[in-house]
Length: 258
Ligand SMILES: [Zn+2]
Image (cartoon, rainbow, N blue to C red; front, side, top):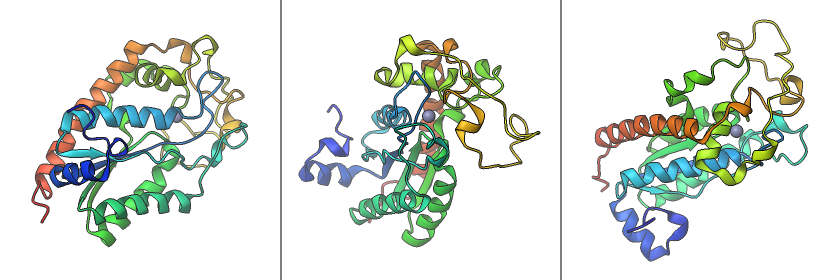
């Protein structure tokens, strides 16, 4: 049955039947923030949703796909007009309440597909809290980082990770409607605000904002982006995620939800 795993397309009767079979809920999280001169605000959410759909399709009927949390923690993009941020506590509360609600309907395993780096610290905190307080099995993934092989090709740019060749390639493949192809440009990067930040020095964390490191909101060189490269990144990440989640579900409650 097509899309029988997408909660937002179901009635409550459909949901009752799907939840009866499902062991795990996938929750996409994203952001509403600027993505350079060539992509729209919904890039992170659109990528997370599209990737989650592919994942759910492969694991159906063991999983259902929850609607996305379409705003994230984006204070570092607020100097760019139109960006909307949640406070950390708002984002954390939304994650908590979505998991709590689905837990009420009998789901005990959760996997969050996160499309936005700014949500990382909140998700780290909430995953621990939800496991402890609601007795659920939960994991989350910055799915792009799983594509360690295919991502190597764009490790050439000094600063990547946002509206760069990697993210733009993924967007071209996963959600082409968010890309304004004729406006694709290189990031107008200014370097990091302090010595030693950047590649190879992730042991130092400074909460700089994006206007401090790029004039046009983009990093890297999106002119190198192609749909084929995006497909390769997604396929590597998808294969690893399917492998992980199958193992995760098998080793946790594995269908015995009573
Ligand atoms: Zn992004």
